[in-house]
Length: 373
Image (tube, rainbow, N blue to C red; front, top):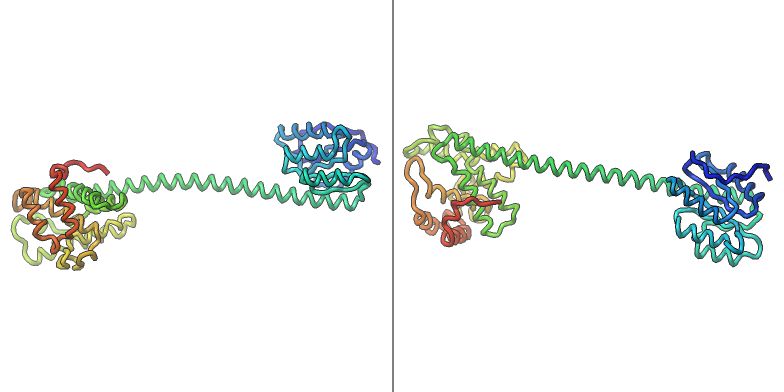
């Protein structure tokens, strides 16, 4: 046996420990020496001579934020047997690896400990140094694997937190971008109103009417919002129409009509470069298509026409009839009802007409009120 004074004080400068519990201090000192020749330098061997002191040591280390990786115990005493000690350790500190040292005639206790303590190894004393060394190295590898897994889990949790923060940041950025795009839409509509003073407010009114009709038709909230914003921009292509044509008070020539009919295509071309605004292209490009296929620019027919364009045409026509124009004064509501009824199934989608006439019949003033999103 190596001659060394027994010292069970808990060191404060290391973080990983192996606890040895043995009632024979000479055997305890031999265990310590053997372990110190086996374990890596980051480990500290803690020898104690009773299970009671062993539990105190583990609790103290846990309170310091340190941990015991391996506990080696003999069979203890009748008052506090080693298998009972390891059972308590397993219950309170299930991550600890456990080794029970037995002597002859203690097989029943060993079996009990295996069944109740999740025992890693049971070694019979006197233990050969090679068997002891291989046992400890095997348990150290398991401890290292667990530590690596915990480190990896900590990294994954950290990355998850970072990803969550990034997602929250992206969500905020997305919201800000959406608000910016909406402001862009409103600015484009205002630019058109500024160019054509006779139709000032037309785009906003069409947007309100279209949104109200879309909601009444039972479209999804997202689709209703797309209809609203697309209708707000439906005439944006008129920015590319010469003012002498756009503001002409009299009848247009055939060439001027063709030039005016280019505004849906021009509007779509304005939106194409801005990816988030592309979803409004169907309403902008096709709001002059007719149900019978005689509209422009593509001559789409019936349900080939995007629903947002069919709705926008109704809203656009209603505002055109009931608002002052450069060449005439506003017409009465009855004329709007008459026109929709007359041209349902030819110029207009019959279902859109039916629902819009219901709105006009039930609450005509509602069309001039602000419609909240």
